[in-house]
Length: 167
Image (tube, rainbow, N blue to C red; front, side):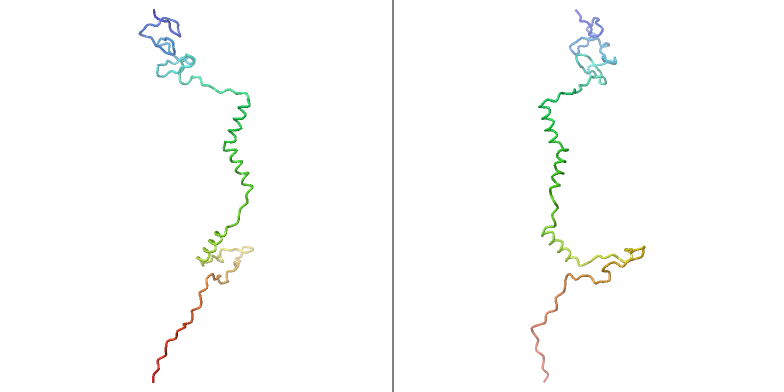
């Protein structure tokens, strides 16, 4: 004997039989429960043994759970591991540190680079404005540049060649 259709309850003959979701359907009766769109074995999605199209497929939504001690502990642990708490801790720890002045090695490097370049940069008179829009003479403009390297005096020869005598 032929079983009845899950939707229309009429007899389903083997030619029009569709076996899906543990039920027997007519091919024409196998449609979305919400909108009635005709479905195939490739296009349906089953939920609670009922066929749905992709648009009307019910999604599971999370419900609010009561705050149990375990949930509170997990929430606190996830907050500690999050970037927000890490950033707050990092910024507060930076407040405890003070910037240190240049180290001895940094000072030596700065001094050596100053010696390597004897060029001193000065502001040209036309680039400096004084009071009232008048040009002001920059400080130290007419002074000679500082000498960072002084050439040693030429050494006096300790050997004097003999003078030829013309007798």
